[in-house]
Length: 181
Image (cartoon, rainbow, N blue to C red; front, side, top):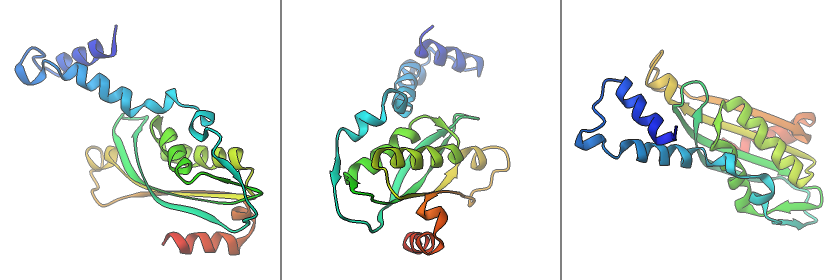
């Protein structure tokens, strides 16, 4: 059974008439949307980075902040939306600027929980750059908490992962945290 057929069955199970004008093409559109929202499964770290790693003497923190992200929680298939802040301390190599955002997007475009996504992003940046340290902080609003369940509209979730120098050196961690405030 195709994804489109599954969406048609879901709509029918909800009590909808899938032949009515407004819903005729909905299963096809929903299937396309879900494939787009989960396109991270078709991407690899190697394809994303695509050789955009450059020699550099820089040993100071590189920070890309406010990277917007859109993901789906694996528990309810509902969106969570927020921003990621990613920093690393180069060890002879720097990553092309857009690649940091693309790494965030690759992991966000998979069924996820925010805690795991934060770690996956940090470990991917570490793996690619061989950095002395990597820090990732993600702030997001979860529709599964806003639209259903406790229905708390103003809540957000913050997760952080600190590797290497960011974990071991409190001054480095403090500098990162003050820069993203």
